[in-house]
Length: 337
Ligand SMILES: C[S@@+](CC[C@H](N)C(=O)[O-])C[C@H]1O[C@@H](n2cnc3c(N)ncnc32)[C@H](O)[C@@H]1O
Image (cartoon, rainbow, N blue to C red; front, side, top):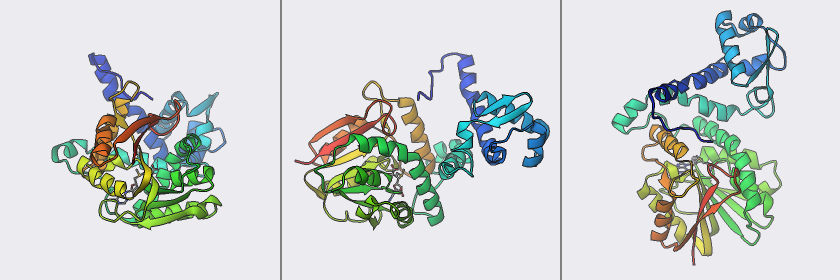
């Protein structure tokens, strides 16, 4: 999705600045838990205002805007929730994406502190060594976010003759698990923080292929790699670290690769080839500025050079089928000889 159009006129500038309105309306709908409270019933603003313990005028204007956004339907003077609101946005639905919604929703306040962060270079949020409860919620959010992408990636990767995979910063183990499901001979290990691994274990426990997943609690920059592997899979990890930290990590991973093994990196990469969505990659760098001390987004060319500098001479960009995989569907491969 193209998230940003070039701004050339004053009216385009105004539209861009004013684009905060819809996200704010969505955040208020989540604050008030509108979709759960409405459920499958039809509501007049007056009746809903009573249920939400809110002002009728405020609720009427909110509902009107949620209808314009396509989230509600209108019948006479009543409103009903559409498909998305009845599933992913409703706490009572098995498809509820609460952890991921929470992650999106709670960024609102931190984005409001961006000016301070640009001045100081210091993050306002925390993605560092952290509170275990926050880490668990974040890890569930990652699972909800990554599951559809992981299924698409696993369907396109042939790991049939591969014995071992390390899911580096694998969090909930979403990718490792989908790859294990697709490749019955594969064994995988997730390397992440303790609290993240608790979530991974909960997800893996009821799954048959989850028995082939093991866990390694440790810091990606400080701990040793737990053994030798055929594939090192890094999804959404590169952007957490600075170039020099990524170099430290890549060198460690390269030393722990079996002969002919591969490092595979999935992330949002800056435009150095047509078709990359630079706007999203640049915006995501802001998230890293707000939440990490050194994170950023990088060009695919730079990442390939880093891999080559640590001894993986054969590098290339793999492209997932259009519209599949995470971000633009680009995965960088570095292969050991
Ligand atoms: C953005 S999440 C990506 C999770 C997963 N790979 C995915 O794509 O869904 C980044 C993961 O890296 C882990 N992580 C970040 N810094 C770390 C560090 N220094 N040591 C261990 N894990 C770390 C986080 O706990 C988190 O699970």
